[in-house]
Image 1: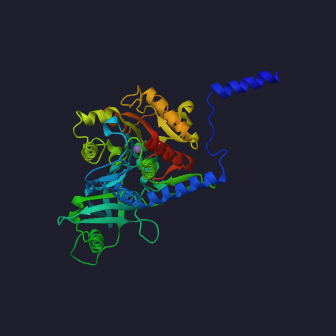
Image 2: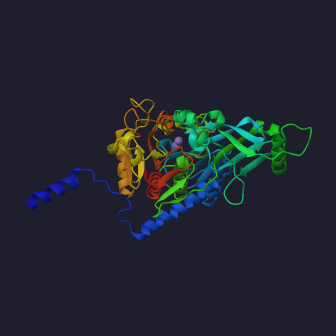
Image 3: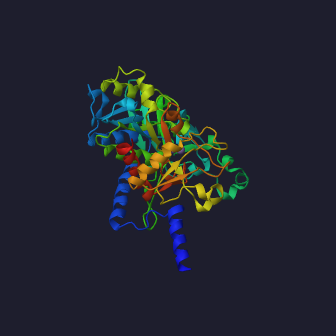
Length: 474
Ligand code: MN
Ligand code: MN
């Protein structure tokens, strides 16, 4: 009898999937490594809450790791490290490989924009002795999550004289803060009966910025004027300059270790700065790979990858054209198409993690879990896989082997139950050009909220996944 039991166990070990929480069995040394990596990640997202700041920070990190601007090279050879920045919102980094470009490249692509509130072009007004800034939300948000939390203003004001003023105000410490008000429960009976999507109206996502009037008998809107005077003194701007500004309202609180065990990270904008950081760290540790490795940090993913800083633009192709030229492969016929056809990509975007408090929307057999490694989606999209990039089985098999060989913990999941979930990333855009692409990123709780949560174990294994792919995928 005992023998049969033993055989059955052996059989189960051989034939069945046996998932285990990744923290289990880790040595103190290994845990320390994960914690140290997360410290760097927490700094990265605290220093860069919007795409422009993340690109600046990423450039600093790249430069410190030997990357040079593409324009500084006359010729490229294996091992060279280059980067290109597009309009301050989008960076492409590459480490030139030993193989020719036409034989394909390995791309890890993440995005740097996150859901937020943008100021309208004419944002400033006064009502009942309050000064306000009007906003338009960016990306998929639950509007009710953005009221009564500390908010900060980040971005730029571009002036007619050609200069650009950087704005960053309202962060933690001694700085002031801003807030969007909500109705008190005592007077909220009708509001509480509304649908969650209507509890806070889009036009009410309006930032409170002042209440002190100037002392003057004749002037109207004294609170607005007083606020504008302060802004003028601090930034040298006038009300009209808001017309050419990009000012983003983001949560003022900082990212931190979460939990008594410090096993998680809570912070704003982890979609998709977690994958941005992990892919940036991975390419910084890529040396003389067989195939050219590329790290792509793009903008505008949250609103459909449109525009000249998004993945749909031709900027990446222009960059590849430059690489082709500098590597002396101009004369290969049809080179760009061949390159795409032979290339592979990890679309590095976050995955929705299983949340036991909302278990009913997930298929537990096909969900990604905290502590089980980087999450891959063979396909996203809702309903009948509509609009999904459906990764090829042969490609996934190669990735499985790569990750197993390099001790990368991974899980393959779906975004929610059939007919419940859905979503898209930049995966399909490069798959359309002929590349093999799969979604591969860190599972996140409370995605698109002002304070998202990740597991440090999964963050670390996302980095390991990208590093293995950039250095070793053939
Ligand atoms: Mn994303
Ligand atoms: Mn997103």
